[in-house]
Image (cartoon, rainbow, N blue to C red; front, side):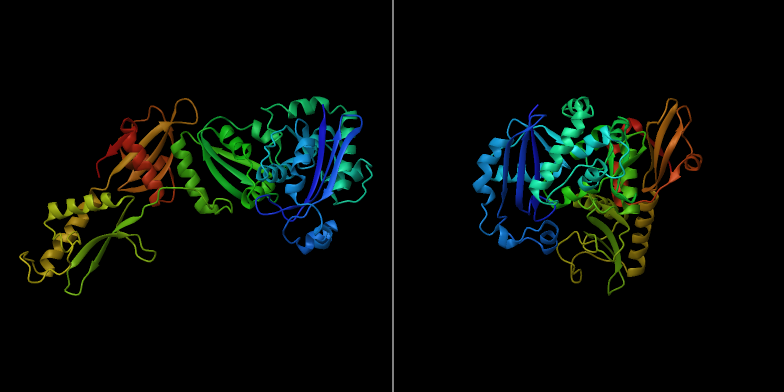
Length: 449
């Protein structure tokens, strides 16, 4: 095996918006260094002061250095067709793959992380940062936090690992199915391996144990793996990967239950990396107000932050369908319900009752609508044999969910509620369950209100 042992210094922690200030590559054949590439690089952007203090590389030092574009071709030549080795390999690899791609080169090589490899060979070390490993294993380091010094220390570490029977681990790590090449630096592989291939909700936690991301899955192991199979170069993705230290999970009988639990947990925990979860939201509401003449009026409008609709809809036509139904069944005025273009009903052919008479019909219409809101259960697979899952909607509101004996007769809603765990209701959860029930009517059990 031929290894390209790499270290870089950069202007920041993620590749998409930061530059490389220095790079060193030592080509190592397992016994000696057979090639070497090292240079300062002009990142074409200022180097932050704290990074200058840490590395000793200043803006003045890189002013006359080559740009990455100027060294891309010889750098690609020395990296290509070799095993890419670095301490925290995904950091260095993400920068170089991104920068080389910008210059027209596609770096696609096997990766080997000396952090994860050292954990296997020397599992009892107090710390696995490069400096602490070198102190523990008595590896001399010159020019710490400079690319040449850290890359040479990594070469010596790799040499020591090979002398301590690291080869079987290396062969295992380099298999495509291993996962060691792409997993977050601090996440033990066994946490991925022990995940079941069943529905559930998973929690990524940081070093302090705080939940930083909640997700749901039809297949927990497959979904969690997918988070790390394509590590992007943006700030959020790189910070997310660095902060994942631990995974926990909660099994669910069905994917629908997992989706409901995910929504509930996100609202409860507000994890920092759940900012971009896409969902179908309820954009419209049915509002009630009294006008200046004393008539109670109904209107379908976009949801307002400080107003509370009496019912919500995902699509505008759904709202108007319900409103027209109320108009026709209870003899309400289309103009007073804003389904005609004009709001001016004076001097028109339409004759209006007095506000008291008309408002009683509106009140009856709204009461009928409330009484006719659906109550139903959605049944599905349980967590174990002889068990079934159940989610309950009561009068249009989500009540809760849980697990029941498979042979239990489901005919009384009061009995059912005693066996279920209540959950918070919101538009999104209610919409998910209603859409699922429409698509799977054989799993729906309706109740008469």
